[in-house]
Length: 560
Image 1: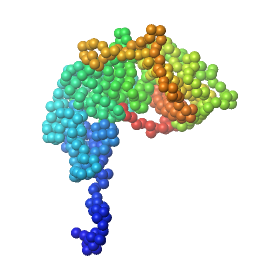
Image 2: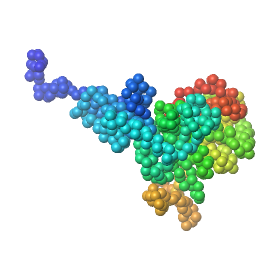
Image 3: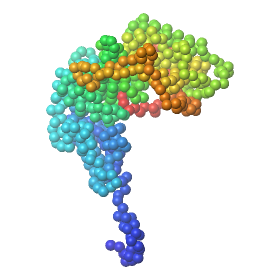
Image 4: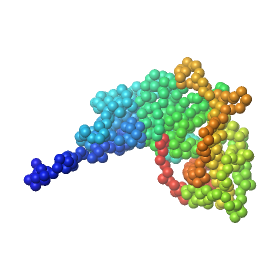
């Protein structure tokens, strides 16, 4: 009750003032107290046995945070209406059956946002494979594991030989065969890559339980349509005492390539957070590439790789190019690199003799390792001759045919190979290389009209097939009666960006590309040093000061 003085004040106050004071007196709990971000209040725990759930001392070793839980709980990932909320999502580490444990101090009604229905939101993603019955989940672990072992033995195909886990460091390539297990008998903890096709109902049912992991850990990921028979999944397994645990996976689609070939498209690749940094991502990528080579596919492509995934791919492909099994093609690559460096030499101009043209700043990460910090290059939209950093077309086709490296990826690799062969002491040569980068980036950023024109004459037609006609099509290029490809029309408004915006965009793209070049150069040089592959600048890139630059750029939306 109010004291005598407070009661008198309330009686003397007008009606509006009394209502205002009541609102202040009975204010609701602040929403910040009864809401939380899903990434912060949720934990994922991967278990193999009942003991994993009972031993609290092991909790930190099997637990990890989600990264993109907003995909499940709305745009900003906020869960409303609970004070002291904690969500434990337990996942069986090979079958991905789920048990959810939702705990909170109290549920708060009447706020601006109603309490989130946590169970329903998770149920939409996990379906019938999720339960809130702990006892039922624990009792099913053994049966589920036996079913998984049976599926792997009957439905999967080994892509790699087993390798001994622990004999290689996180940055070692599987090109080093010292870790292979000899023979079929596996007596120690080993790793292996296997492949399964989603044409089998048992495999599809298992894959539906695997799909939600991509939502938690791959930015922008969507569950694949696993009823399409052209999907296949590659699994990185840990094998011990004839039991298998999943370390990571890769979803791959077999696209048709005219007239009689296929191309493998890597759609999603993920190494589970508990096992990242152990080389499984590299094993998965190499397994897909080896499969493409073995099948005689046209090439291998990748769907929107993250920064770290692209770096890993670049490193792998550069090592493959530096150790091509065909001596004839290897000699052609070496000759082409020498020719590319010579072309840069013939174009370089002493800094004192350069004309006054717009300047573009170089990447800050690069300035201490070679580039001066500025490079002069006129912003043009292309040149008649082959670009300074483009590989020879004939070599590009030969590499694609042998190693299945697609055209776009080979261009990236070629820039990296030239960069690796630059003399660290020749600043004019480095500036000319940077000018080539600016030329290429400028064309990509501001030469899009030509790409639009290419698309203008393309049409899509549905095709009949034994699977599902609504999901297959043929794209053809159609010309008008005059023999010309239809062109785009505009409304008369200029879409050309301002000069200062062009320079800013170009500076940002240049900085990002140089950072990529330096990072891959360090990784490739470290591998080359270990594997005995000779490159002229290996001493420069393996010295400590080269390794310590920008070591903090390791985040990835598609972790390895």
